[in-house]
Amino acid sequence: MNTNRRRWMQLAALGAPGVLVGGCWQRSHDATYGDKGSSPSEALPVVATTGMIADMVRSIGGDAVQLTQLIPAGVDPHLYKPIRDDVVAIVHSKIVFYNGLKLEGRMSDVLGAGSKSQRVHVALSDALDPSSLIGEASSQEVDPHIWMDVSMWSKTIGSIRDTLGGFLVHHRERLERAAGELIEQLEALDRYGKEAIGRIPKPQRILISSHDAFQYFGRRYGLRVEGVQGISTASEAGLQRIPELIELIGANSVPAVFKESSVAGKMIDAVIEGAASRRIELRVGKELYSDALGPVGSGAETYIGMMKHNFDAVAEALSGG
Ligand SMILES: [Zn+2]
Image (cartoon, rainbow, N blue to C red; front, side, top):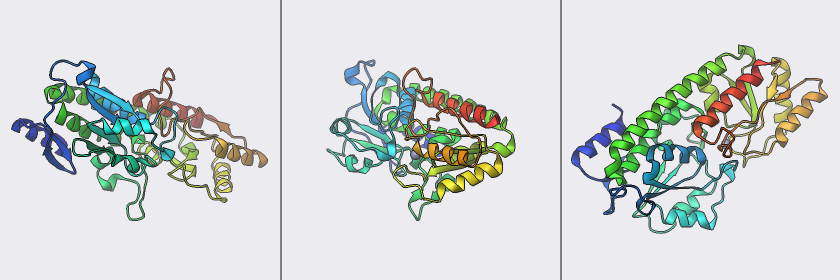
């Protein structure tokens, strides 16, 4: 039994509505939600920043949750600036789920809005073992793209389940069941990813994309990963970066590079032009979903759909050539 689950069980045994804040259980406030069915008026108001987080909260909370997603499909979270409606949604919410590790550009500006005493803020990255994160905590340059390793993302499910359970006390059994099902689905997705990437010939397992969003993906599924820009799209690419990448592509016969749905493609265009000037033929793979889900109807409008698309697109483009 993991720690989160144990805490949840201890709490359930006490019969106390509570929420997990900074690693300690605190009693929640008077109101409990969803005890008379699930009419929208009594659904628990919850805010999630990215589509990847919103999708998991929806899967676990179902119609007991009234969910507001702040950052729409296709929008870059690194450059996120809250608008007035976002502040209103946060002020009226009971829980704010966010990624943390500085993914959401100006998020900290709004978390302080309104009275915080009735609201819980949950950074999903807090559920992870710090030693599993990529980057230097001391230099504050920790890679925030934790959803790119499905096995890591799955470890954040417990914190969503337990935080919702602190408010939705009459729904705990259902939350527990939904979270268990989601964990199973992500286990299958993780296996799917390993198989898909495993089909790429080893020397061609080099993933080059617009920004450095795929390090966790590469570590888990066995690819070398290079971004033109760094881990945030707010940073500039160094002048040497494009010649370096062209060198790498030429030396390893990398067959394809990738654009990302939430990032302008001009950096990748520059890589392709530079390669062409050296007579290196380079294809562009299907656009990847790095930091945002796809639009409705794209097949990538859920977290599972997004990752499946990425596994397929990478496997297909890098296997060719
Ligand atoms: Zn990113």
